Length: 53
Image 1 (tube, helix red, strand yellow):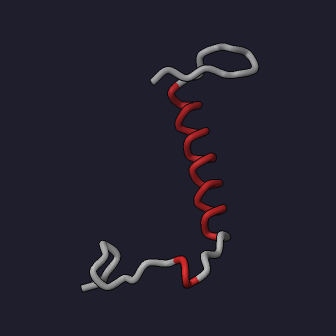
Image 2 (cartoon, one colour):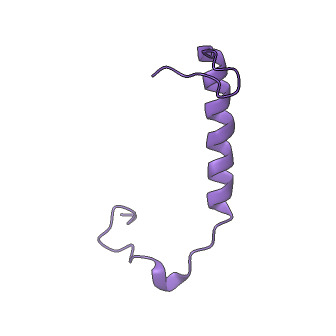
């Protein structure tokens, strides 16, 4: 993939890409941690990929 800055329209370095990916990935994960799902919306763990054996 090739990445460019929306504001300057310049290409950004692989180092900047890595920094932005880490920053945005962390923000998404932190948002998901704070997102509560009501129990009746959850699937049973038994028989699922999440089942601990």
